[in-house]
Image (cartoon, rainbow, N blue to C red; front, side, top):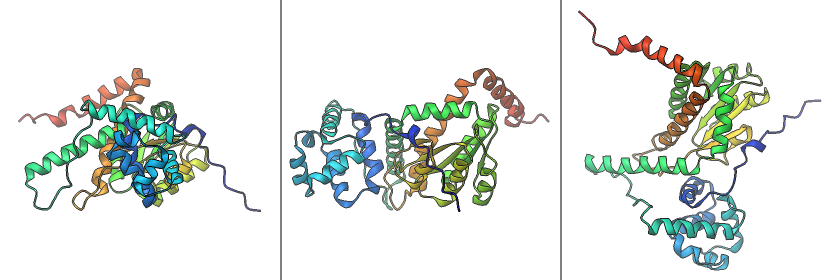
Length: 309
């Protein structure tokens, strides 16, 4: 008889608690695309008017959004809160932050006829917002667990395609420069071929903004089945990739537009997570990482200096 697949090891990837006020707006932006239309109305309403919604009962918010009490409760839970009461407390905290001037103004999408100076301003704002949202929503307990696994890993395999593949290559070269064995595989066939060689003590990292990229999920599943510690860096915490991730590192879901597709908007948050992982691993392995990093700088120094004639 065929063997059933191993049960997902997801206990360690459970979020440490409901998001605080600073993370609520980021959570709404991240989760809204995967919600139903009625749940989106609730999420967008609480994000746009936290002060007003904090004064509403569950019945009042349902009436304001044209939904049901059950939809309000489901939205609260999808945003990471046990119930609507906890969401109201976070809304009150977010409203207080906005009143103190902590919330940035939201700029419009980039238009075809925008002057280049305005494009710079809008992109800078969106990049800053993506970084802030990712930082606010990042589960530091999951980050620390991933760092610990990488610091002692025999090897680290990273999977990504398209723009996520470029981010994966950035992570691989950073880890290589501090003496770790790390490789990024952007070819799905090669990724699966190497994933079958992983075992307990190795780390596999999948980078996918959508959480549904088959060419990334498949090698992570294979690594998962072979006992490697698996990590997902994703903008969709509820995506399929999370089923095979021991540790989940969520990135922000920035606003997309015709002139700023997901490949651009997702990369900023992913690069922040990559840099956090690199610094964390370098800190834990400092005695070996510092000499390795110095040696790599020294080996490349002559390539960054003018040639002597």
